[in-house]
Length: 234
Image (cartoon, rainbow, N blue to C red; front, side, top):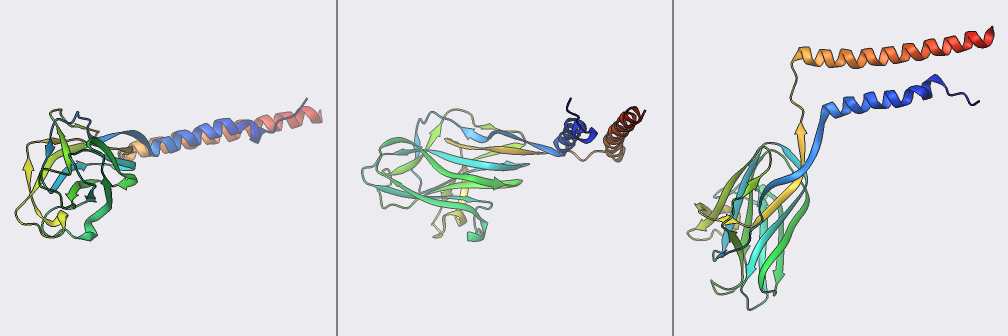
């Protein structure tokens, strides 16, 4: 008969204890940060538009898509910013991510802008800047929807903002005002759920339970090993 050492027999339980301990440190949960799935029932003929939200937690693996509408008729290019500031005083140092895209496809479009981002707690601004020399009512525009925008845990939707007045030359630094529309876009990721800081008594109790379990396990295996040795001797 094969003999298994006490250490090896203890591994499953020890692994379980470690797993429980690490699980208590925090966990990730995939889901929606902020989203309006549409349908698109209109678009904004504005050169610079921003959507904003505020999140209380850190989210990883963040992906962002925009629901746009292209009325053409030419190849159109646009720029998308993600910043942590908006309005006068905003600079490139406030950029979290930026990208450009171009399309000649007409009608409704779902445009993937960013992916793989990590966003900490704070307020963010997703800005669409029309950079093509299209006529005002031509080209790519941000789609809007009559549906309500949904948010994830600890997230507040700050609505849509239109740039007003003369352009500053840097879209995120322009003056913006709140607009009564719901932009079609989606921001998803993995929420890093912070474990609430327990009271000192709770922390001590948790530590004592884990420590006691480990000691009892080691003592049991030590006694079992000693008993086996005595049986072999006599």
